[in-house]
Length: 312
Image (cartoon, rainbow, N blue to C red; front, side, top):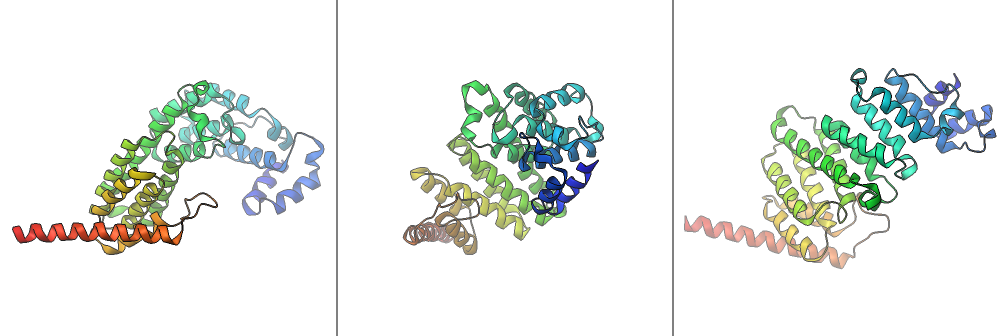
């Protein structure tokens, strides 16, 4: 089947080679077909075959233009009660992507069913990928709309489970941890959390999260992981507003015992980072103000520590 070649091409050069193959095969003779639909259809075919499941169509056009949520429901009915050959988490993610097709919640009931199943499975990698998938919706607020029932609540449950599992693994598996993978995961977690700030995550929960992160960071002896925890915590603080941000910033800095980390926090909170929205900037004056405030708090905490030492 030619879509095998298309999927292989997608892995190497999504636009150039895909466009060439699509043009040769005249895929766009069907007015409903498009490059983006072909890419998604190719992705679905790759995932289905990797899990050893039968493809619904051998023709890429049919596969790309079929009603995706209906196909997701079909897979759900046929495979939800089985172990799916060890691919249960991967299958749940695929069905979720079919139900959230093109950045929108297309099938509310199916999304609810999948998220409930993901919660019961509680697989860290699946939780991470599901949270990333949901955070890419065109409008995050849709998750919490009354018409979408309890989707937002389910997502927040998964986010919390994911956060707990990541911080727990860092605490108990420090000696065997893969530093590069761990830092990537931490920054993905940070991106997910900031996506839901002021939407599904309450201020009190953020305060508890910062406490947990700093607690893990102070005990962590892996330099890259320790740095990443503080970076992600600073990114979360940067996205807060007004007095809440000031209080959280002081709490974060008071837990730091290294001036280099304090400076790094100042840079992140006071300037744009990879997590910031396009076009979002902070003036150098504001950045300097944040830096001075952090240094003031840090010096005050050091003075208190010295005084306590003299009293002893």
